[in-house]
Length: 277
Image 1 (tube, rainbow, N blue to C red):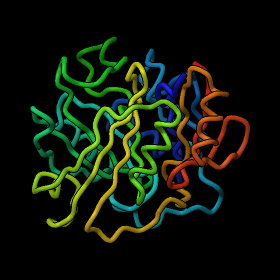
Image 2: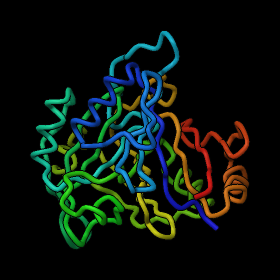
Image 3: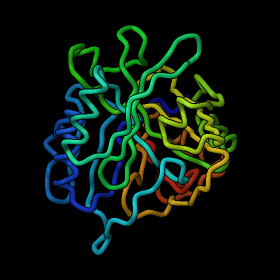
Image 4: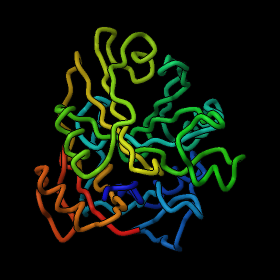
């Protein structure tokens, strides 16, 4: 029994309607399940059971601060596939985001093109080029191969304890499809880290590798800040599990802090909720 995939990521927003417009314009996400108000909007790709984005109004009085850097610890990034990175960069910029230039770098025995950019509410985005037949499973692309963007592809935690965070989620059944060091000029340019800094990335998947998946990221050689307590941005990951009660117990055994029935606090303060399919 295992965690399978992230059904939705909950993001606290300073202005839900403005944030919804950004994600609709930049990435083509749509309102799903009819959930759309000034206090809450659920975005995704109709027909895709996972990889959804729930925008909720932040607590009264919450105001945007200086946005975090990619390497600041906390639930930091969301990922989405694109069939055209230049198109996505232009759409992000037009919607009010700040995309960095797309970069191509070695990835295993092949190469990968990707861009990183800052979106609404201090959430960073990692956007790899979708190569037909080579990308991870996407229900959105399976249903509509010509669509520009997928559902959410990943959620990314930036942590000071890489091995501890990976072990935490492995205890609940996720497996590392990749875990390695990434360094050199392409990665410096991709995320804006100093030339002598390093990045380690673990890509964790459930048994079927469905979207959205989880990435654990850590950095060396950077002056990072703990931004896990930010009131805006990614607050909660909602995982589908084969057996929610069993996965909840496994997370508690791995050191999670219980918050409510089937809800815990995990690495870097992120709230994790476990639900059935």
